[in-house]
Image 1: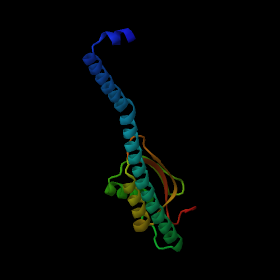
Image 2: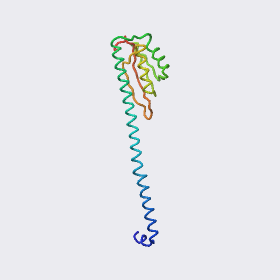
Image 3: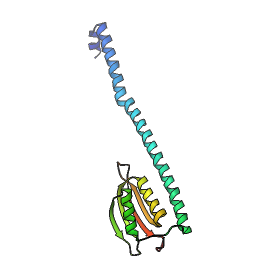
Image 4: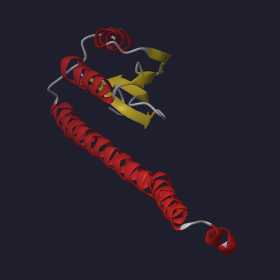
Length: 163
């Protein structure tokens, strides 16, 4: 290799050295600097999304706590069957109930897939405030790769056992 280098005249060696330096800079940029910059930008975007979700969940928790307090104070009472009211309210909010199972106590368990959390929480708040229907149990999990959730909710009228 040294002999090959020495066989080149001064001008060729200068050009090869410049080309080698440019190649090294290109490799450094493509394999080190660019991925690090992209990782940092992706991490920042993920952090911001997580912060937004946290704030949304905290607002929803505060609303839920207020509704539970109102429920204990007896401010709302159901005005009809849980199933009919819940389904009508879901249609009004644009929710698609994927599965529905009536409970023995007059309550209802339902499953909703691919719903925005704000829409789901608005619907739950509307059921509580306007119709006195409470959520006895809830399981909410994020859908992979989407900004939506899937939920399983057990609903009951305020007078139902366990409500």
